[in-house]
Length: 80
Image (cartoon, rainbow, N blue to C red):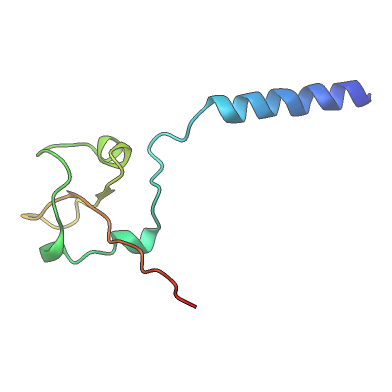
């Protein structure tokens, strides 16, 4: 029984390490709260949300006439 548990854990570990989180941004949702007029373009016209996120950028197509794929805001550093 103990051997089966170890095998299951080993398989789960291998699967977890072998499948990188595609489309997952390395920034917080708050960093994407950029005013539409302040967005700095990060992609080409017509870029998909997935391609935009894979570049490490935010995607929001709710406002016409502004960049939909844009750079996130820098996180403020916490100074103690």
